[in-house]
Amino acid sequence: MADTQAVDTGAEKQPRSVRVVLLALMITMMLAMLDNMIVGTAMPTIVGELGGLEHLSWVVTAYTLATAASTPLWGKLGDMHGRKGVFMSSIVLFLIGSVLSGMAQDMGQLIGFRAVQGLGAGGLMVGVMAIIGDLIPPRERGKYQGMMAAVMALAMIGGPLVGGTITDNWGWRWAFYINLPLGVVALAAISVVLHLPKKRAQARIDYLGAALLTVGITAIVLVTTWGGTEYAWTSARIMELTGIGVASLIGFVFWQTKAAEPVVPLHIFRSRNFTLMSVIGFITGFVMFGATLFLPLYQQSVQGASATNSGLLLLPMLGAMLVISMVAGRVTTNTGKYKVFPVVGSVAMVAGLYLLSTMDTDTSRLTSGVYMAVVGLGMGCLMQITMLVAQNSVEMKDMGVASSSATLFRTLGSSFGVAIMGALFNHRVQDVMAERAGALGSKVTETSAQLDAASLAKLPTVAREAYQHAVTAGTHSAFLLGAVVAVVSLAAAVFVKEVPLKGAGPKEEEERVQMPVSEPV
Image (cartoon, helix red, strand yellow):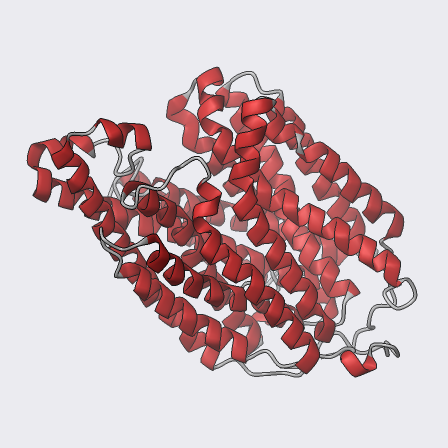
């Protein structure tokens, strides 16, 4: 693998400017992470004003689809035409989508504008990680990516609180407008102080590859979103989408071997570490978003916690993730070693999910909090280390596609996690309700296996107690499945090859010697 220049991007000569850029990147990361959390809290108010309850799921699905489909393309565009301009374009598109969403007059408009916002969001996370890859040598990158993981955890904790406050005091439209001042600050800082080498690519964009990948991802995401809810898993619509998705992805892989400038160069998967990190990233997304979906439901339905501050219910898990991600980044920077974190993280994730699967109707909040902290420890070890190792496994010219591919696998993992764990949860809840409360139990959950606090309070005592046992059984099945899936992450982590991270260590900090940014695997 050819040596690539270390960052003669001003990182050594202008450390203050680099710090400003990193702050702007953190703001951008916050934009990407906060948006769905804030909007989720505002959704009941939005539906109350705009109507269209039957299309509610599309407000989230349109955003998710656009984000997943555009992620690889943003990464490739950054590699071909330069990171700075492409990244700023994604921020502008995200802000345009935010403004339009805030101005929506009906549910159809909101869904369309959320898709525009999602197209921009696809470039935010990829841009942040790829620019850090350009600016910071791998040896130093761990602590900064640990900080990014901390920002993600803070966004997940604070998002529902911020969303509730904005909606109650300013109105739901400000859940979108709030992105503007943050985005403008990030744009200004990046425009003025970020200096990266300009690129001029003669090759054309692989439109056919991009189209095949978009169709394939869209079909798979729709299968995981609709399967078991809008349509039965064995319905003709789900079977058609599955066939389209599989055929498109097979066609995409074939075409990538022929394209002059492929969207996702398949040679990056020749690196064992990159492939293993893609698997671990997928599993991490699968587990993380499944956990954030079912834990608040269990605590509200079974433990009687308030739904008002729903983000705080996850504090033990997200707090542990925040602290451990910072520690993992620092240790990686100081020692240059990282294999211990995927291994320890996977072990903790398996153990924590198994512990969560043992919760019953009598489990205390303290006990469940300890179990959540174990899962958070595991995710803190994995969240950004996977990105760091993936970037360290490719040449500098492939930094964008490596970052976008790692992000895409995590996104797809979250879609599969929510869908599969959700289907298992719903099926188990409905079975237990029918067993414990008979016809009444079946009637209570015939429309949805997830009841809000108001609906739960109106149930007869027998049905309410049956529902608590049903939710416990559902979470047991979902988390046990998560633990089994997480074993795959552990198996992948064992085979990771610890390739030295290049760049300045603590003793070299003053010299800041230029080093290659990547290393053969």
